[in-house]
Length: 139
Image (tube, helix red, strand yellow):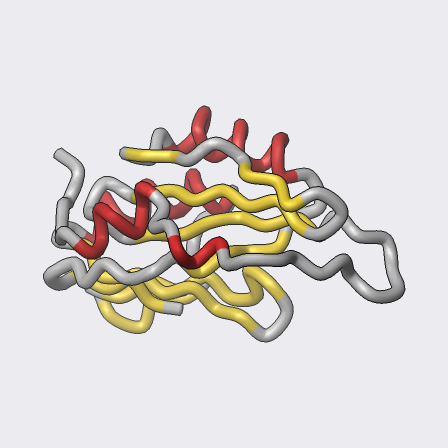
């Protein structure tokens, strides 16, 4: 996963706080990488014009604790409340200071077949999706 930020130093500072650690690879001055933020996943910050996209969500085991930690340590420009699909999953999303979206999810079912949801949650855009669709970059 890669996001672009207008200032690499500010981007590295924000994402180091959000991810809970500094990057471990910096092949060029305008590119930093965090290896293994999840199995087989690296996260990259590059200097350039932001290109906001829909959130990539990282799996966590304690969504409340991780959401609180990100709010406290990284101060994202926007954060949603935790939305629960009981017996299935809980999710929340954030916007970094440049409008890039990321989020968290926690699996709530304990095994077997997950419950089936009826209807479509995609009929309603989240606030993060509205901001991205309207290219609204938080100040």
